[in-house]
Length: 188
Length: 80
Image (cartoon, rainbow over all chains, first blue to last red; front, side):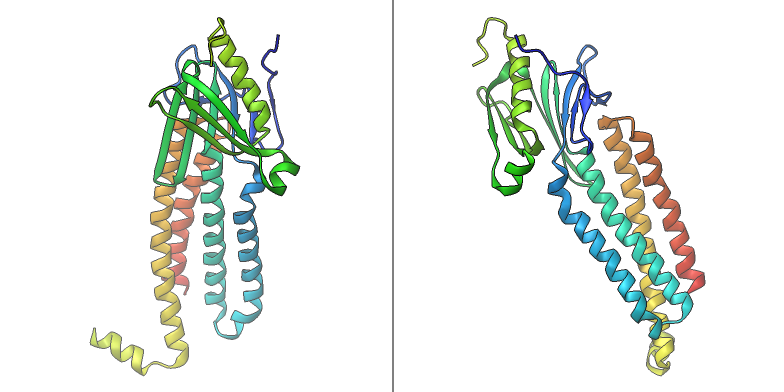
């Protein structure tokens, strides 16, 4: 009989088992079993962009002293650094708070599309009718990340975890929770 | 308004660049303050929605940006 894995986390904190976290609307006796974020490799675009911007600022420092006085050069550098930091910080926050949460009662998808727009979707484990996992592409296959689709009965909310690490293990954990929630074996 | 036009049209190249940099810096600094306030507030909301051990660190870093924005405004107004 399969049991839930022990508390663990990976280096990038994108796959956390039994983490010490709390979320809004969490029930008193509801325990968080799994928290997943997008795989860090999928975040490479803004990391590379930030690095390129920093390099551009460094290269710019070789050119702009010819056109501006020292105070202006200092100000341009300060402004450039803050701009790059804010770009990186926003993207980090969006990655950090866009999570999929699996508890012993519910599956929750928390999406922050930008700083001022969020989406909170949840369904109970009992309502889950089907789970699909999709691993595709070179990087997905090599680094073992992909999508997990949780379908629910009727018109209830469908949940989607995109680009998460170890999708097969996530499905396995949800299956264990479904079996525990429906001991008669009618989880669909 | 006429003074501004006169300044723009009669100033030397250095003055024009200085004015341009200052105007850009002041505008950017106030926009950064706006961004910092929104980010700080949204980080609080995000932390309330999903709180971890890192929540306080994230909130402090986001709040620090408001102070940085204040520094930027001072730099823009008085240093350039």
